Image 1 (cartoon, one colour):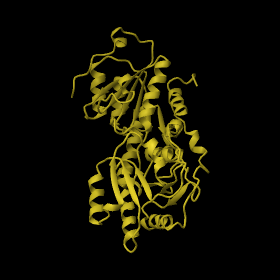
Image 2: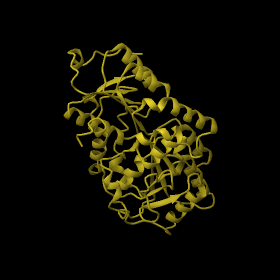
Image 3: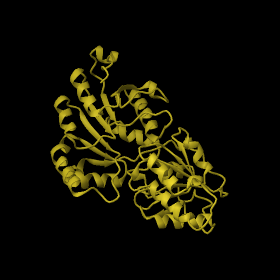
Image 4: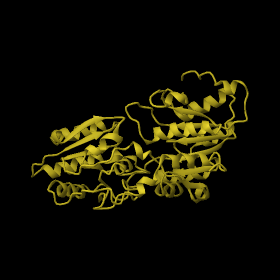
Length: 378
């Protein structure tokens, strides 16, 4: 583990009158992938500073892209964020008033251990997707036991959607119900370039982490079925990276579908390129919020996604601003693509029904999170 950096002058001078927040984020900082959470981290830090609050950020790695150079960042060197933070607290006499976790497993012994070192109010934000078929029985029992043992150390559970909040209570027990809230994620919609030309160009986009739960393997099988007996002209560009990338590429090669798929890697300007495509395809098996669906709708790009998982916010209305199918149902996805490619069902003005997405602003998200720290401010 890297040695802990020298403490900011604020701490060295023994100043304690300001609120101090530790934000633990198991979120890799990648300049080639700038998404909604990056903008949130930057804006939350700026708003905290404006209100006299110091934030120490704990990430797996360091980076100075975007506005990260203005943040006070401690990196774990890709070791466990939880273990790094526990060692940090043992080594440094810092009094935090609040500890906020993002992308950290909830209701684990870590929360008990940190309360032995700190009197800080702990706020746990849930971003974790759930498996399509639910957790196995053993895992469900483990989560319920952990909820009984460790949920008492968390002051507030934050779900990023109604679905997320309900799943938290189901997993960890009804005892967390009265301290579980919903704060929807938000985006700066002014940054998203609107789609103006709806002439069909045979181009689809996938934008997600390349993990099994994103369901891209279902899309590959659907394309195989689609092209088994008919020749179509179209291209699906896949943006993103992740552990499942090689498996997806192998599937495409095994099915001889290379001409239909192009892996573009991670990029920082998806907000500017969504509008160049005809549809977003998001065959996800599990989401808590789903940024790519929200981002696409902000660009007026129609969305093809799963009914209850990809459409977790209920923003996509069938035949208005997109098409819906049951998660894992490859034939349903294939039929949607057939109808689009045969010009039997295409959308020409997806702005209809998109009013709700414009309420998901970054300003509102930041203010609601800050209200957890400064409850009388907002």
